[in-house]
Image (cartoon, rainbow over all chains, first blue to last red; front, side, top):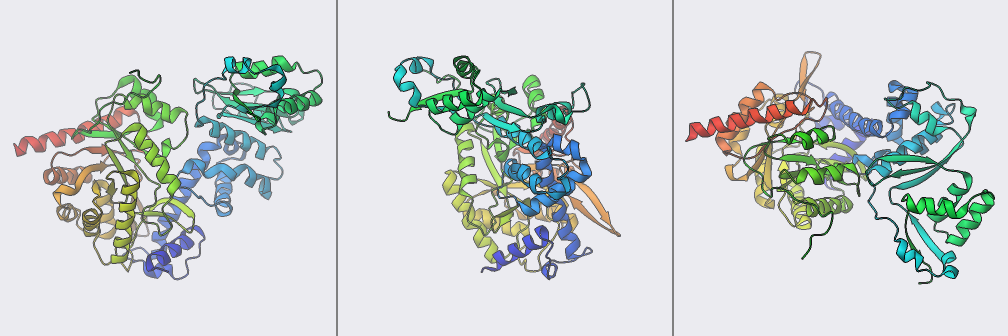
Length: 260
Length: 291
C-alpha cells in the first residue's frame, strides 16, 4: 500500500470512526494538538452531512426537534456513510434507517413521512418529459392495447402509507396556518407525487383502483394486467376516466408494445 | 436551418478580468430580476448534477446573461481510490451543456475506501503525493478534453511527512499537468495564520503565468485554550487583511477574474454585489497606478 493511501485510510478512521490510534503523531502540533486539529475536520464533515440531510428532511427535523435530528443524522452517517461527492444523494437511505432506529420506534409514521420528503426531493431534479403521443396511441388497434406497457413521468413517484402523512407534511410547512395537530386515526393515504412542467411539485391523493393501476404500470405490467388489478382492487372504478385523467395530466408519458 | 425549440441560449463565452460572484439558489430570482452588474458567475458543479428541475432551469436562464465558471467540490482528485467516473461523466455533461469559460477543483481529497467525507481534506506535500495528484489532473483533463484550474485549500493541520511548501507543490503540479491555478487569497491567509507562514511570500512564489482566477471569501476565528484557528466558513465579508493580500495579488498577477464566494449565512444579493464592486475598484486602482 502506498504511503499516501495509508495516510488517507488513517485519516478516515480518525475522523469518521473515531479510531485515531496514533494518527495524530503524523500531524504537526504547533499550539494545538493533532487531535484538536482533526476535530476541525470532524466538525466540518458533520456539518456538511447534517446540512445535506436537513435540506431534504425539514419535516422530520421539525417533528423530532433539532437536537434529536442531529443525533439521528450522526447515527445515520455511521450506518450509511456517504458514497458520493454529490451531497444531494446522501439522504437516500434515511427513511429505511429511521425504520430500524429504535429511538424513534414509537413514532411509527416517521419513516413514511421521511419517504414522502425523499420522493419530493427526488422528483424535484428529475428529468423533463414531453406529454404522451396521443395520435400514436390512437393508431394502436384495440386488440393490441392490452399488451402495451406505459411509463410514468420521470418526475412522478407513487407512495402508499398506513398513516396520514400528507396531512402531517402539510401542517409542518412554514407557511401553514391550519390545525396544529393530526388525528392518526384518520387513516392512510395513497399518493402520486409529481413535478409538473412549471417545475412545481404536486401531491395527488389517489383512490385504491387508481393507485393500483399506476403501481402496476410502474412495475412494468402490461396494460391488461394493470387494468385487471385495478378493477380487482376497486370494482366501482371508472377505468377509462381514470386512465385518461393520468394521460391528460401528464403522469403517463410514453408507451411501447412488448411484441413490436 | 432551424433552432431546436427550447435549446439553451448561451451568454458570453469568456470571463472578463473583473469580479464575479458565486451564484447560490437563494439568489436565483434576485439575479434574474435585477441582472446585477457583476462580471461573471460561478456555481458549484455538483448542485447541477440532477437530470432536470429548478437548478438547471435557472442556470440555463441565467447563463443567457453571464459568463460562467464551474467550480467542483466533490471530484476528490487527490484520493487514492480510482477516479469516480460517474462524477466525471456528470461534470462533462454539464460542461457540454453550459460551455463554461473556467472549470476548477481543489488541491485536496475527500474520499477513501469508497467512503466520502465531503470536505476538502489536506494532502501531505510529498513527492509521492505530487506525482499522484499530477497524474490524476492529467486523467481529469483528458476525460474532460480541457484544462482545469486547481485551487489551494484552507487547511487546519500540517503533516509531519510534508517536505514541500504548498506554493511549490501547486507550481510544480501546474507545470507538470498543464492545469492552471485558482489562487484563493482568503485560503492563503487562513492557512498562513494557522500554520505560521508568510502569505505575501506565498503569492510571490507563484509564477505569474499560471494564475487564471482568484477567490475571495470570509473566514471565522475559533479560539480554544489560548490558541486560535481560522476556519474558511464563507460566512462573512472579506476580511480587511485579505483585501490587502488581494491588492498584492493584483499587483503581481495583473488583471484576472476574481470571485466573491459566500455559502453560509448568505446575505442579500446586494451585499455580494458590493463586495464584487470593491474588488473591481481595487483592480482599477492598481491598473491606474501601473499606467
